[in-house]
Image (tube, rainbow over all chains, first blue to last red; front, side):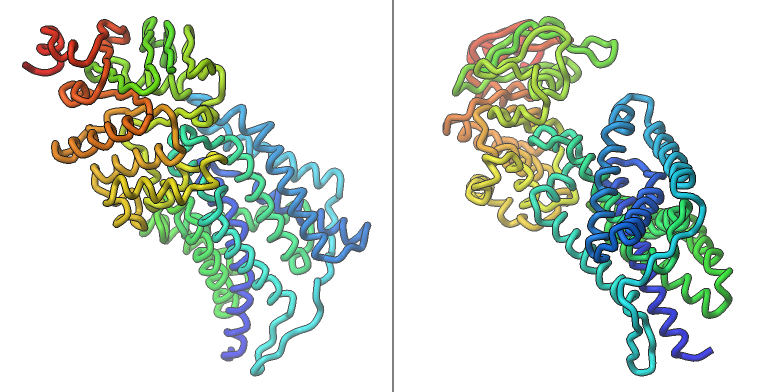
Length: 291
Length: 234
């Protein structure tokens, strides 16, 4: 074991962590605004992967267009899901859990839909850019650098948007006090719709970036969804900064586990950290209210 | 200007208002007096669309407020300062005011309106970048009123602005309410503190267990024997 391996693994951990952060920020966005969990988040991620694959396979488009198309379709699906399945359940007194259960139903449906329609064979997506950066003896694939840069750019952009724009203000206001937001003229249903759309688009973005590394298949959404739940707990439910910090933390822990133990141990390490947080710091880094 | 006609309002199966009617004319300060649980807040919440009347109508300058979505009501020039201020605790004072200017006509020249409100409440200028959740009760009430005013409403609903505040602060806030009214804003004021409410109001209505039981000019109400006993503690 040498220093070079550790640094390279740490870098890989950061890459993976940035994707965890992206997937988790969608979950935390939904929790922060609507106080609900979305179990179909991983499947919206999966759909993103398939869209990219088909865009490549059928049309041979530039990856950038494939990514945008995947985000757009995921956005539309998220909106459709909120409007048709969740909205009728959201405001029913005494039906608090039913929207969450409904998302579980959507998740099962989408997995089996993908299995039935697109088959169980794993699909290969080529790297967007070939080649490896060599720097001071360290090696990292350009694809991974691209992932890091894209994740950072999207998250910073989104953060500024939420902090500064009119829509961002309305989103945070709705998250903090829906009724007070309503009397100030904010249509909370529209905010919820956008929340689901944006959250799904972020998941699809992560899927497209990772598709060349992990192959596209009907179950590809399950691991990132589980990891995103861990990240959300680490960071604090509903906290955007927490999702980012938690994502990088989890990615680093997993890659260190690979270096020092073996790759079979990485999930063990991840869930041990989760259990540790649940026992010693259940509110996560930033507690539950940050929007 | 604001007309409430024979409204019945329910929470689930429990009726909270029975056949409540009253009017607020343009330029007035009208106060709704009543004890805890009499239905004052319910009335305001019905006017701003958070509750829908089962029977009766609410209209503002001829527009049926009970027929439109609650988030559209502010577009018709009616702004509501809810009970307990209901600020956005993790947003700064400035951000809270910005949300107050969310509707498109107000958003355009929001900085002007926000600066104006900071002139009215200088303390808010000092607290501009502080999170609203960390303000004192009086500052929160001022911030809530300012937030409701940046959309430049014609009618302002105020729900218990004096609640939990020191008498000095209450006086300051009521002075501002009076000044806001003198600038042409119609005010509907719900208060448990009948004493101070009747000082600034032109007219008042008394609500008891969901019924309007009395109405009149403010100075007449404050002379009334029953009001003196039941609400002014004299």
